[in-house]
Length: 552
Image 1 (cartoon, rainbow, N blue to C red):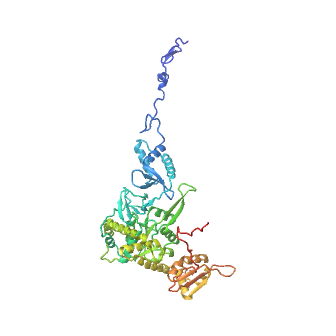
Image 2: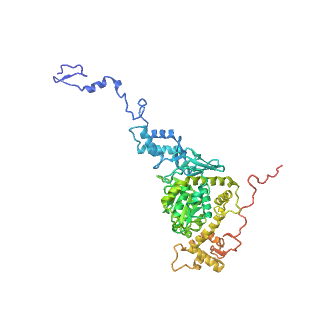
Image 3: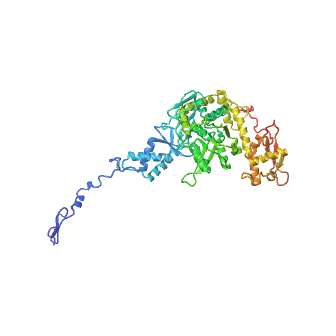
């Protein structure tokens, strides 16, 4: 029997006449209830008295809101802008985006702790929602327009400095007055300086006559005006004229890039990616331009828009809208299609003889040495043009009318004649492009022979002889394509005096559309459409409408 039955806790008790030890480590648990769970684990860097740390995603969001403000661009992309730093928009995602920066800051703020991918993703979702609370704002690439109308050029440097140009001059500012974004295709631009001889230093690097050089200078300063179309500059010349190197210099003056020269894009998506990341691009060694690329380049000159599905979504879309500054190099201007030919500025480069040829290394070193002075001289020309541009009026408005007005402003301030030279060169480009199109040349020969030809598109195909024994790849395959091709060729045909009228219908029951091709009189630059009365009815100027009759 149990002879002793006292002090059950903390002492031995006999069991069957023998004593055995009791687990003393558990005995102390019940001696003081207040000592249980009095200390909680604390995350590194946290407040030990405040309890458990908030989730990592919440801490990342708080960290981001303390250092950045969040905006939504007009194309639907969220960006972060440092509260104490350059006025540069940082994308939330991507290799150089805010996500990567916050991951590093989190690791520095909480030693021994690293933000997980899920925490960063959750934080980015919250920050995107914060950005959507504000109205969209313009986010510019390399060039922008300030609220007071001044032109702002981003130098692309880490400190965020920019050049502000207006009609009274230009200056370098420490913080840009407009918001810019950066891309991996951009390179910093040197700070411009006043030298007084910058244009001469640039001309010494190029093998072109004075007329072509003045057109080039006007094109360069116009390339920094962000809200007008810019014709694509085409460097034309035989092998050995330094076309590629010259075009590379042009791009690196307007929008420096580690890849100033690019190959032709494979498709529209590849082109959109390139155009989204660069303000100025150069397509090198263009021999043939497929129709889709010709149309794409035309839209990029006048203002292109691309709608695409947003990443990781099924129904959301993003819209990319852009005007771009383009340069191309080619041997034969006949590679340019009709619409594109009317949107180019053609510069002929002269052959470089062996006595004046320099190595690429020497050219690069010289260009880098004179580039600050060249930029200063170009900004001077731009400031002078902006001062008189509001008062410039043209007697007639050609294609690329905004560009033509800037040329007229440059001529007025510099005493040049770039506008006349540009218009004359444009006519030559149209003729070259026409001569490079066998179908267009066949139409011209038909009109020269018949004087006036009338018929359907199918009859036109039958009437035109196919050059050679094999039909060229660009020759229309059916009547529908032939009719559309004639419509596209109308501007080029008009440049050589052939008018196109496609507004008439046959008088039979089929009502087929008729094409009327005729030679216009030499003194009558008629359009391709028939006379149809005034398109613009007379109206009183804005704010000066008809008075209200007296109702008394």
